[in-house]
Length: 216
Ligand code: GRF
Picture (tube, rainbow, N blue to C red):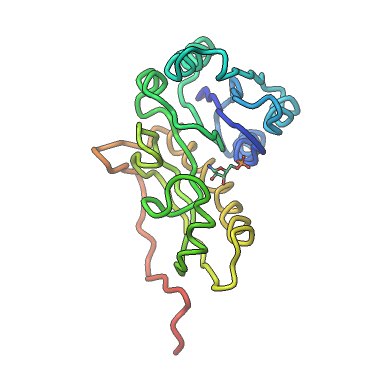
């Protein structure tokens, strides 16, 4: 059984989607620990409700940012964690964690990377006026949302969309693709070659998507 560690700073709805997939038998994994940098994070309640250990690590308690990640890596390793999931973790992950878990840290981002990295990907997309946005699960590297892409899913964007309306549409898809990416990892079906993540058994969907749909 794949052992997961989750890092979250807030609401934790993606963490919940992982917990639900495990509970429903869609994902053969177990969450060993939730680590948070925010003692108020609602994710802590979700962990408790699921019987998962919740651990608050105060970033202010370290003399350097690297030391904070050394500690996180130690806590994860002590619990046998094999894959680390960032789920609304509002910090740039630094080298000590990435070196402890090479190509073993995933993140979910609410835009189609490399468009709209960083904060407020939904607002950036709505303001830019793109017709399609979506979400991306990727392996984490030292950049901001720059690591190899594992799965993406797209949603249409309407001119009247606000950050909130678009975020809601995207979030529903986040909750589908994050557990799916973890499942592919758990099944040993992901292989990273440079920037590309190859998915064993993947079939290219047929057809072309156009937004707005073409009229006859
Ligand atoms: C999500 O939009 C995710 O894509 C981004 O942060 C948000 C976290 O939401 N990285 P939640 O805490 O999982 O509800």
